[in-house]
Image (cartoon, rainbow, N blue to C red; front, side, top):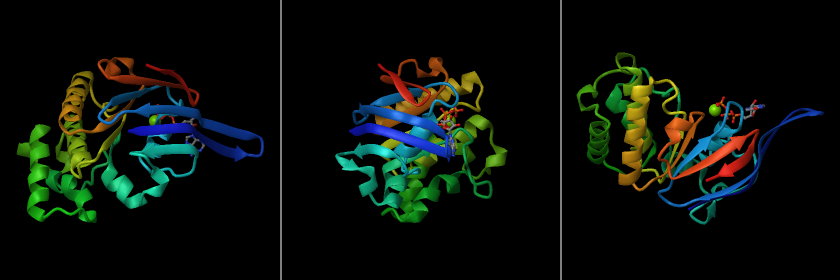
Length: 222
Ligand SMILES: Nc1ncnc2c1ncn2[C@@H]1O[C@H](COP(=O)(O)OP(=O)(O)OP(=O)(O)O)[C@@H](O)[C@H]1O
Ligand SMILES: [Mg+2]
């Protein structure tokens, strides 16, 4: 379970100018729940996701994952293995091929043999429909394919929490829907709690829970 308690993120620009990027946000998410974070540009969605992912550790309030404050986890372990992250711009390494990109997070010391890692990478790449693209470099793929590589990479270390920041933002609507279906399927199969940021209400259809942010405030939790 994930509990967010009175989360505040304030950017102090100068003496008289502050941005309340997150203003006293509290909610809980059950294990395996799929949660949409919805709000217009500047409402605080990425700020919230970066805190949940352990990338931003400067905030007030608490984030508790499995009864432990995320500040009490080893930061490397937390953001490499507890969570997996997918970004709007895919963030693949251009010099590495598809299979190498997916395997990359495991280079930092998870207890899997080379064979186990490669089997899981191939299983995930098959799952996302890319088994015939293992040796392709990112610039030899379409946008939707790049995003599917990024999804496989996010899942390689079996994270308990998947964080996706506008994962379909750079894709056409048909490909975007395919990626959403894939995320639904993976959510059901891989026992993950999933947070999905979007400004598009249509993409949040069918998601268990919806958190609406406006100007850093949680205005609805349904
Ligand atoms: N490093 C920073 N310094 C100052 N203000 C910032 C910084 N990063 C973000 N902000 C402000 O915090 C607010 C929330 O930003 P955030 O990136 O979380 O929005 P968002 O909901 O993800 O928007 P978008 O849909 O455009 O990605 C914005 O008003 C932004 O200007
Ligand atoms: Mg954002």
